[in-house]
Amino acid sequence: MAKQRRRRPKKTIKKTKHRSIWSTYLIRAVAGIGILLFMVVAAGVLLSHFTSNRYVAPLMKKSRVAGSPTFEIYPKNDISPRELLPKKPPRAIGKLPKIAIIIDDIGYDKTIAKKFLGLHAVLTFSILPYSPYDKSIARSVHSKGYDVMLHLPMEPDEYPSINPGPGVLLTSMAPDQLIGQLNEDLATFPFITGVNNHMGSKMTTVSPQLNQIFSVLKAKKLYFIDSRTTPDTLCKPTAHLFRIPFAQKDVFIDHKPEPEFIRKQIHRLILIAESHGEAVGIAHPHPETYNILREMLPEVEKKAKLVRASDIVHID
View (spheres, one colour):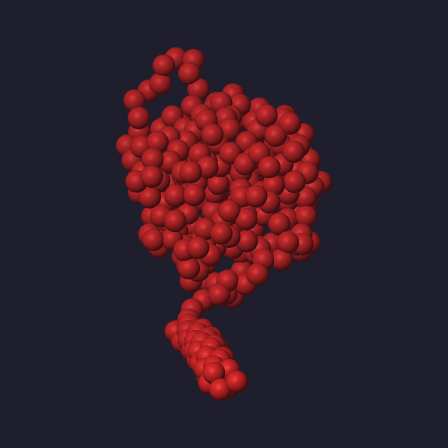
């Protein structure tokens, strides 16, 4: 009996030791979890503090925009770089110069788009992203065998008093936001072969952002045509750097939507093409532009060959 009484305290002591060890482990585990939670909360506070001033791009509304946009902000001195160059040697007899005419700001009026398509002339249609009829017009243009372009909204000097519209690329965007928005814009409608800028007098002068934009275009094998909304544009050297097929606007055909002015600009476009072998004109979906273009098409096609934008771009 005495031996059994001596063994009992030993068993009790052993159980007490086990309980003490498990209590220690439990306390350490709870303390560790507490420290971890504290570190997570502290990291969140610090991250919020240091990124509070960083630009956050507004969420893009995917709904189509019904209101007609501002067509363009035109430069005061709209001089083509080709007009400052000496004329090229005479062409071979019977070989016509090339002219590409791009109809910008398409997507908000399907009736006028249908009229331009009905001219049965080789035109290029540049469509604004998130416009009400972007997809249906893109399909119609593609079915005719013409080029579909993305008319990419870019920040002008006048922003925010003048907003280029949904999908705009801003110079204040972080690289991931800029590239993400560009990819979303390129996915809004099918059959895109190239891009030209909508406004963009500020964006096209900022080299880091242009590098980001052109890296995406290079990866997607798209060409770029500079609308030249500012003489300070850096698009040409950036396209050369990335080896992207490139051209630039020579003439805005209708920044004054008046019949006589439009006729004068079309004659100017023909003259540039005859002097340099090719030219790029940009027009807009004005009724006046449609009427004058329909009137002058026989003269244009007699003196030049109308081609798609993709037929006039080059890798310099």
